[in-house]
Length: 352
Ligand code: F6R
Image (cartoon, rainbow, N blue to C red):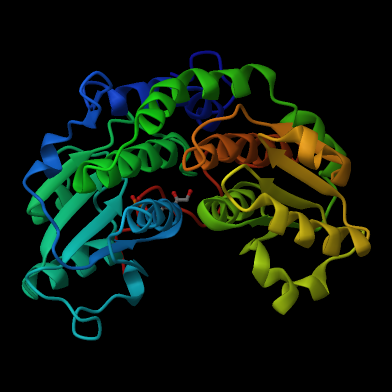
């Protein structure tokens, strides 16, 4: 069932080009210059769009919320376990989007039920046909990633990001030709990364570190959070992700020559500013790994570069994440961890 791969996680990382292609199929019309997402065609959100989700799906939600906000829509993102419709103003103009791969996460289900009870319109963004979320919500959009066995979410995260990019374009009618073209090119670009990544070398170089930090700004900030979560889950090592600007407000105290810092420095994520943060950690002798589509600009500030193809600035975070998945995978592999079934974790969390 692992088709020659050592782990489902590795197989699923490598299935991402196909997963993204399936997510896009029939939904992008480059000739007409628009996104045809029937699932949300009836929705014209007048009010705020609220996102509720947990874990990796929450990181996807944060990313999707940014893409909508950049198209003029007011958004809020909530950890589902922190969402209570009585504390968060909801009206019949509010659209609440539950981002949940399994469609069964108890915290997310509770938030969606409350939102429905409070009169909001609800949309489930899920991978699972007929799931609780799909049944609870007024509207459903499937991410079409195919089954994911590894407990650590990989291809479902990529598919959530892509589906949310489609939702952002479809809800607002704002999808430029460059954005549509970049969506079409994503699967091949992910394949290029899978074929050429140097993540394994980086993992070998830093497998003994006690802690890892991940920083990124703007659209890349949610991917920094996701990079750290993946590292924690499968390596059992201390890892933290931050919006790059937050580093100096506390976490910098933890940075030393022993803590590799993965900096997402992609065009469109204010890379000049993030470079300022990179210099701060370098002054503390931390090794820096740049994940970038602009190696000529940032290469000299980094000890290592993990390159990603250039894309639309709002979509490069999808590519950067793939490099970070591979680094975590190879660190966990070197450590001999139970990659597909990390200790204490379950694929679907059905308790609150
Ligand atoms: C991390 C991971 C979890 C899930 C979270 C929500 O790799 O898989 O953080 O993302 O439990 O799950 P869903 O998306 O099924 O609601």
